Length: 255
Image 1 (tube, helix red, strand yellow):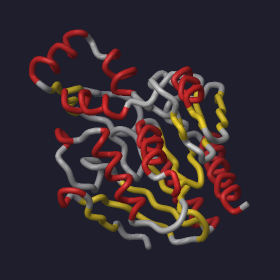
Image 2 (cartoon, rainbow, N blue to C red):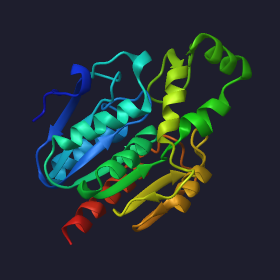
Image 3 (cartoon, rainbow, N blue to C red):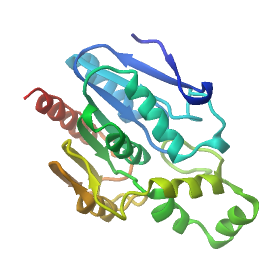
């Protein structure tokens, strides 16, 4: 199936997704903050799925891409709910691939549906990013504006990467995300977890990944620190590494 499909979740909002029919556990792509399912890594996995016969799904978060939703109502909890909605409409085990914020959503999904997880592949995972990375990274006047007005417009003119342009940060997103913080306690995930982390990532520093590894309990954990790797990890070698990591998870699920 090549056309965009839509799944209705809470409140009548619709998730847009694309699917490749194949064999084995379904590989599910969960993108990052303000990224959509047409990004470089998502498309590379789509191509690999067609070539290798994977069952594969990629989708847009609430208020991202082709999915519905008011951005000002977007929260980590809502993105978690929609990932659960998607998984609940698939059959069998899944290998979840989460990039940046999608790594946080993937971890929350694994905690909510442990019996469905065949494995997780996380790319520069940004668990707790609202509290540990984004809020501290804002200028003081920006934090004060959010607290005073409930939101602020962030301008990213000329920034490299995906998801460019002005956007709003809301106080409600920061406050709601505190319900889903992970790094303050053990994270019991029995499925194997493979983390691909760029050492040169300036958005999600590599020590953020080691903090996650210290918290993960219950299953095998592999952390690859990629020398010179940036936040996107979208170069040819990076994409090959990602595809092979997913392939290993699929094979492991069969054994």
